[in-house]
Amino acid sequence: MLDEIIKIAKDCGLLLKNARALQIEQKNHDANNLVTEYDVKIQEILRQKLLQILPEASFLGEEGVQNFERDGYCFICDPIDGTTNFIKDLKHSAVSIALLKDGKPILGVICNPYLDEVFWAEKGKGAFCNGEKITTSQESPQNSLIVFGTAPYNRELSAKTWKLAEKSLEMALDVRRMGAAVLDLADVARGRFGMYWELILSPWDFAAGVLLVEEAGGKVLTIDGKKIDDYFAKSSIAALANDKFYTFWDK
Image: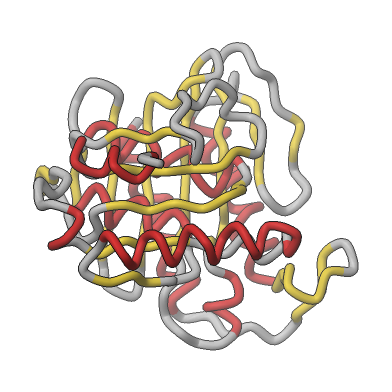
């Protein structure tokens, strides 16, 4: 099943790579929350092909397909994570697929078609990029990059976001803001970043990436240092490469 899901992710990634957004709309009358015809098109491909592989699964997708069940199997998908990057032709977007069983991720696949990278993880079996086993960085925060998201759909969190960004810069080599949460999580798993955090994300933004980081040897908590207990609800996220980053919560 993993090989079939990886192929689906690659096929959708190729479609994304060769696409150009022509129809751009706002979601919920929010000028910062955009959707294109390719978000909708790729999600429908994911829904159809994934449910052919596992017909008993339910499906939760970003673009209005949320007929899911908490029990049993459920696919959680983001057809294009980094839609604004896609619209602006920044070439930093991804297709994300997570498979949950009874509410917990057991498989995650993330495809970055622009770098020809496919990340995957299975519960208890490690994390991989293009077939190579990957692990999180063991470097200190002072020698690491910290990447963060600005929760652009929740502007009431801006002041807290920038306060934490300043704290991140003080403790790290430098900071980055890339605009695609699943790739930020994948890059923590890959050892490129020491930490990623954002004050609020939807399940399709983090479900696959959380498993990837954990299987690569890192840890993922909420921004308050608590365990993620609901993969069907929005949550803050703090993905840590190693325990040296626990200083992030020091007063």
